[in-house]
Length: 172
Image 1: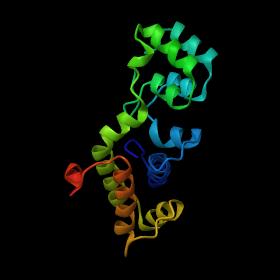
Image 2: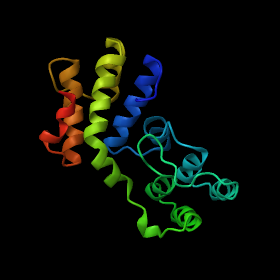
Image 3: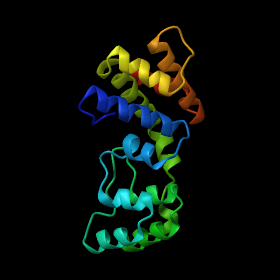
Image 4: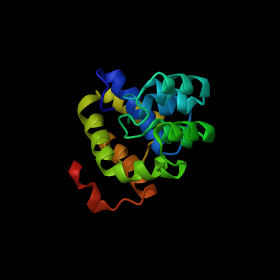
């Protein structure tokens, strides 16, 4: 949602990112929601393309680069269950596989800031018809208006990450 330039782009990024936070882990959700600032290495690692990962590493790509969500290619590979790619990347940068922090830990730690970005995007970047579309796509029915319904979705995610209400005040 942070780097989208049009209302439709914001809608796609926001909807897919929220679906990811709610536990839907398809490649499309990860691609459109979480890693829009990533690299070819990020995409290859997430998709399990070890030949492409090897080619990119040998060509000198930055194996420590982080996408918008702060994730490395090794984290994306780990999240997708591609252990051989995690090992390949970590060996390339001279670090142990055990040094890779699982995505959910990184995401939970970043959630208060991510939540504020999402709320700001929803309220300021989407016209009402796209706000309604986001909520329909997420089956968000709790709340008396669009902002209350969206807030209920964000609260559900906050609870899953065990983020205290005091940590979420940057939006208010």
